[in-house]
Length: 161
Image 1: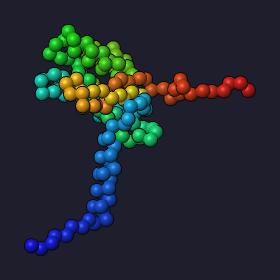
Image 2: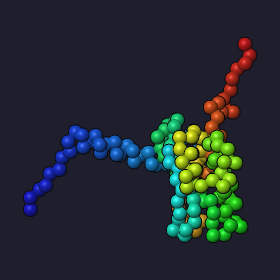
Image 3: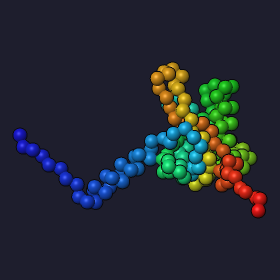
Image 4: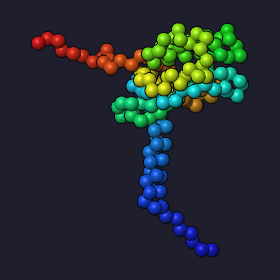
């Protein structure tokens, strides 16, 4: 049996390193509050035919800069008495926190409208949670969003002069 060799050209090696670096960005950031930009916002249907809006957030500052985390916002469910109000409320919160007027959604075509979110700067709060059916599984996701505040309340300014 002959031995095979494999080598990478400098360009192929650079591409492989970039792919690796990009992949690292998909490790969710640890729990905390982050300034992020919405990179993807699209409408979709899950396997149970429930409509949702998928949003991908990219952390823009700090040691987790470049990391990406996504979330589905369900806008309807098979049980509208429990799921729809929660999902719609969360989506309306996101829309508001992105600096958009929630009144624009009334009668709007969500499939076309969700792209309006792309590029909006927002504050995300990332938390971990245990799986409801298997407590050994832990998920990290965007728990909720806030309006982006360029000067957070924790910043102090000395006005004494």
